[in-house]
Amino acid sequence: MTTVTFRRTPATATEAGPATAVRTGERPGREPLRHLAPNWFAVVMGTGIIGNAAATLPLQFPGLKGAATAAWALASLILIVLAGAWVLHWRRYPQEARGHGMHPVMMQFYGAAPMALMTVGAGTLMLGKDVIGLGAAVTVDWVLWSAGTVLGLVTAASIPYRMITRHRFDADSAFGGWLMPVVNNMLSAAM
Image (cartoon, rainbow, N blue to C red; front, top):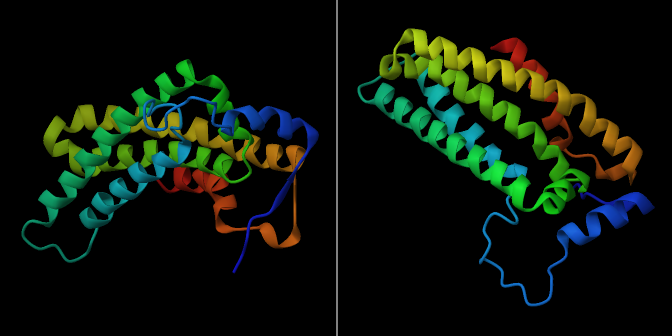
């Protein structure tokens, strides 16, 4: 079993500390946006991938395309709601939001947001064209693919850099999540 262990450098100990501390008198659950983390974008990725995969299966059966379209629509809705909540989170709780970028595990999930954009974009082109029209689907896909590619390049450069400069990891602390910030570029090329 692989475990993630890390030692905070003096810079991360002071920067990430207050972001993860529960303040006295604070009631958990009363402010749902306070602890919104980038790992929620993985929900959009997974939901969108279900629809995209179903649309590309070599064997189609009655109802599959409808179910795939429903999965795409759900992923699209979740992405819209999550993007709005994410903006509010950064505006209302910037210290907590920056704390996620300092956490050695949570920072990996910044790679989920670009992949969520590209997954929904690809689903829009494959499945959404029957709902919103081909021209709109191409435009939405182009915008989401472009934004996902740019954000993917940013995360592919910045997250490993932060890992190297801000944390010291034990030899056995590597795990598959380290690939999330850099796999975006492969997804951009494949779409």
